[in-house]
Length: 130
Image (cartoon, rainbow, N blue to C red; front, side, top):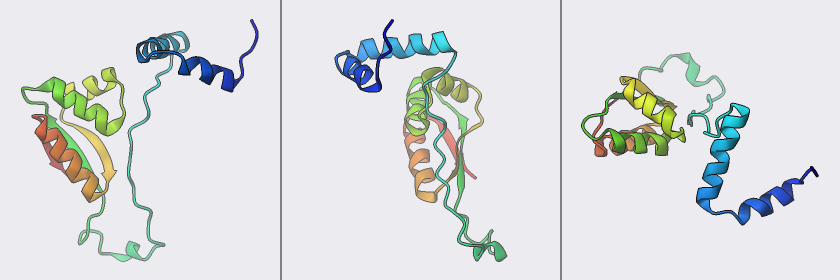
């Protein structure tokens, strides 16, 4: 079998439908024992050169963990929101939701954590920020 270049592969993928691509990814994952899901997105602010390391850590918390306490009655909607927030695959997101209480996002900025909490609560989940 002739080896295809990256450009040739991309051209072949461009001609496929989304369903065909989805089936390809599933088969690829099964064949090679990998997952195409991106790792959990973590938004971490870099340290400010050691200036903040002095002592006022409790005064201004800038990193939050979004903890899913329970999925509530609408588990499917919560799973969809977890997938949107974390880029996890369906199985991984389902496992996370069923294992509640569990961290959905870790070390997220205040804005990102509040948006995630709002989205998850809108889907019917019980969420806390730590």
